[in-house]
Amino acid sequence: MNPPLTFEKSQIAACGMNCGTCIGFLRTRNRCPGCRVNVEKPVTRVRCIVKNCDNLKETSSGYCYDCGKFPCKRIVQLDKRYRTKYNTSFIENLEMIRDKGMESFLRFEGSRRNCPECGYVLSVHKKNCLFCNMATN
Image 1 (cartoon, rainbow, N blue to C red):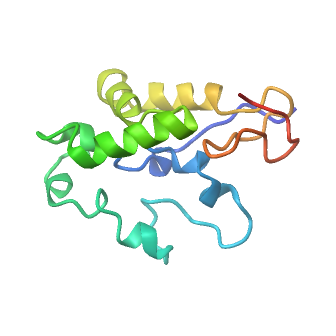
Image 2: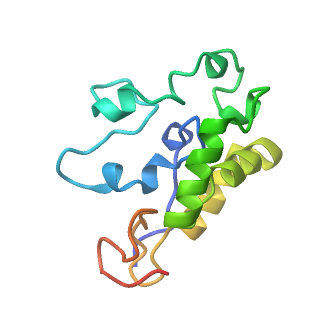
Image 3: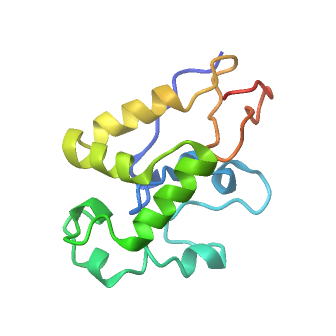
């Protein structure tokens, strides 16, 4: 089994998505470096409404929970889609970061996003481990 997972603050997008668990980040071909890394990215990340939000630019934290409009319509829509399709909540993620701190959230993600069979990172977008193919949900 692999060592326990650790995620970095730089992997947590402003919207509350853990980019370290995104299929785009985990794949080997055309890999996305994550939302907060300043390198060439897929056009969908460059055009991201949340990342380019003027209100977000005014927050001290750089996260949506710090915005006076949280949760805004866009975050509510993203949250609904991810709760329905992928069993994860951006709003809950952001509230945990706000209320318990980033380190606590990163530890939580490390414990819930690892395959119980092989220890590999579980993608929020897939129902099976990308490494050993064990069903996770």
